[in-house]
Structures are given as structure tokens and as C-alpha cells.
Length: 142
Image (cartoon, rainbow, N blue to C red; front, side):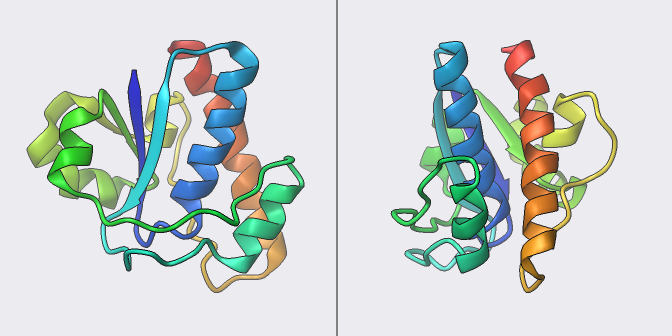
């Protein structure tokens, strides 16, 4: 199964979600291929310094991450697209129909994943914690 995580700039939430889900998938031996992209990414941007720092707490190295803008190829090869907000989902569902969900919706949880961009390290830690808890529930469904 190909899973695509989508946020705005592909420097914080979606790369953290992809990296965390990859860690969970390895631990649970899930047959998934995981990617991330942004609706308005600047191709090649690195993950934010705060995202890199917070992922170290999970023994994950985001230093090699490079942002990519969502494109037709990514969408076509994805079996499941998980967005960080309802607004992201609204942009994509006209093209993807029933294979796009918000991450929280797919995890049977409420709300969106708040964007920590520009925030302090504590906002990033809270974002990562929310992502991790939701992703554990996603793993149970796959």
C-alpha cells in the first residue's frame, strides 16, 4: 500500500508524519511505502530545524528530507492520501474521491493537525505527539 502524507509546505507536518509512520510500519511489519508532499511546497526545501530536532526524540533523522510539491504522479500511485487539515482534503478530494482523508478522520479522531511552522519547539513537540498517537491508530487499520 502506498501512503502519501500532505500538508502545506512539506517542511514540518507531512515529513514528520511520514517519518513517524515509517518507524511504526517497520516496528509492526506493515507492507507500506510512504511519501510526503506539500500543496505549496518549495521543491528542495529542507525540513524545519525544529522538526529535525523533535524527530531526534523519536530516533528519526530528518536531515535528508527535501520538500516536494504534490503532483499527478504522486497522487496516481497513492492508495491512501492523508492530509493534515480539512482544507488540504478539500483541495484534493475533487481529484481523489474516496482515497483522501484527513489524518485525524482516518484515525477516528477529531480536529486537524495544527501547523507548528514559525512556532517554538514546544509546539513542534505537541504536533509530533498528536501525529504519533493518530498514526498508531492508522497502523491498526492497515
